[in-house]
Length: 135
Image 1 (cartoon, rainbow, N blue to C red):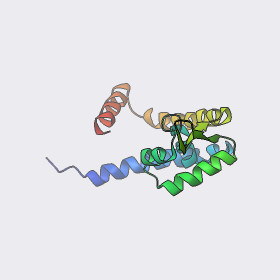
Image 2: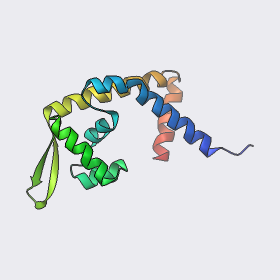
Image 3: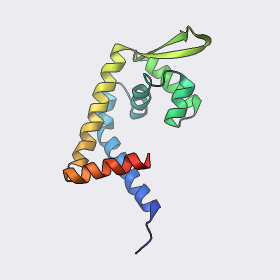
Image 4: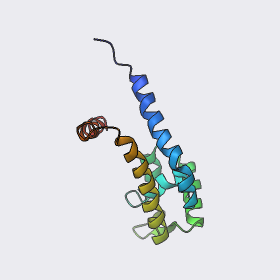
């Protein structure tokens, strides 16, 4: 039995994800976002504090700050002082932000779904189980 090449598997996974993202980035740009901003926006409701958001997305805090400022300027986010801790800002997704998030994630989902369509239903289910196991 040959040894599994983990780097090759990682590379295939990375290339797949980047191909999907590249394939929809122009459409996401038409929504007024770049793909990374979409990822930030999609996590705000679950992780409403900038530091928590940075940790969740494995992004440096200053990078998240830049994205938050751009999303706020575009009207997709707003910052509020946290009433429980006046030293912290809590992020809120605006209705416009929810709308573009939904559209952007649908674009990614459709593009990834097209790739998944190359697999049988059983293979798709197995892939899902394997990815959950690795997560």
